Length: 178
Ligand SMILES: [Zn+2]
View 1 (cartoon, rainbow, N blue to C red):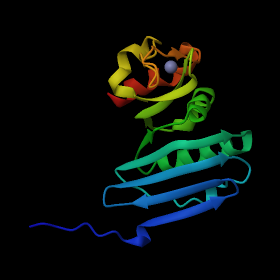
View 2 (cartoon, rainbow, N blue to C red; view 1 turned 180 degrees about the vertical axis):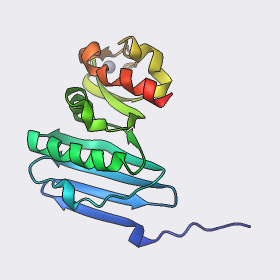
View 3 (spheres, rainbow, N blue to C red; view 1 turned 120 degrees about the vertical axis):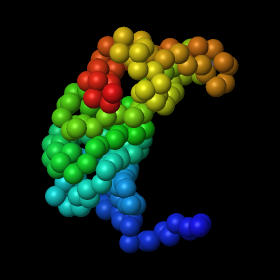
């Protein structure tokens, strides 16, 4: 029997807070919160609906900026959602990774499935690369950035942050994921 998956518009909602947009999508087994913009004093965690699910995903590649008020709100939201399911952080922006490293509570019970890391080419300047945590767990745990090449000249890219500091969050993360 074939089944056509119905897309129910009621299962998607969007909330705006100043320069931040949050899109929430739900299906039978998961809920996904996609953040786009700045997590700052306009963000109010209490106005974000909490949906429980086996897996609660966060898509964070468009998180631009955090300030101290925003991060406090963020931690409250994550604390509540941690009680409702397993949190999975996907495609974390460089800003998001910096934030997680500064405030480990930013992750709640969650794990980082994938994240961006800053690289640079001598010739072509700064860029970033998506790293899937489990594919590079060993190297990252030893604070060694995965090797990446420039898409323009094929030369090896230089990792453009302090490895010990940037990969700090991964250590606790990998043991939680396994
Ligand atoms: Zn290059």
